[in-house]
Image 1 (cartoon, rainbow, N blue to C red):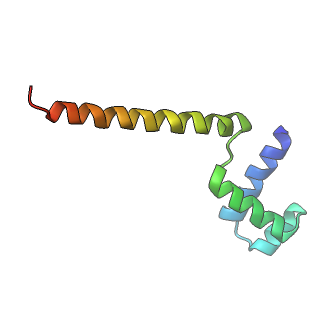
Image 2: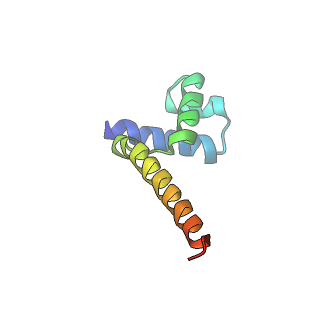
Length: 82
């Protein structure tokens, strides 16, 4: 699993920063062009997150939403006359 994640990161680096085109990069990596494009699309979404980090995202997003709601409530309360 760790090797696969490292391969994805390396492929994304070559795809984004490499001097070669998509076809040449895919050939260099020994994968199909469509697979390279899929890895790039997934990389844009996940940016190389581990499975643990990906699993933690929903909890963190929920926490941010709750904190924003609490902040909005406190702002409204501060505007009320005492």
